[in-house]
Image (cartoon, helix red, strand yellow):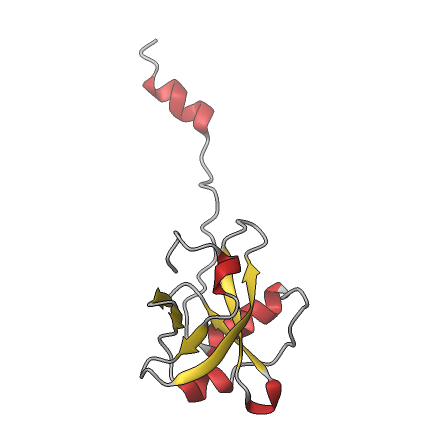
Length: 124
């Protein structure tokens, strides 16, 4: 997502799918627990007043609206977790899988003996 936009300014913007078809209006923005960066938007679709979660990372703000690079049907079929509540890591994982996005785990810290490496470099 564009980093120069305040996530609070996304609320109320119209949202469109990859074909330019209107999906609905941004209802809420969810921030990543670890980084505080905007991660998900809840789009009020109008269909039974349901909100559909969309990932913000591949989405773009263009001409005062949110453009989501997924088909409307896929967005409307996203898991429904309700709005106004915290998304659990399991729910986020379900959403990532739904959209076919890579969720590779954070690489572990290298298991190295830094003291031993420092001794190797020591000429004495």
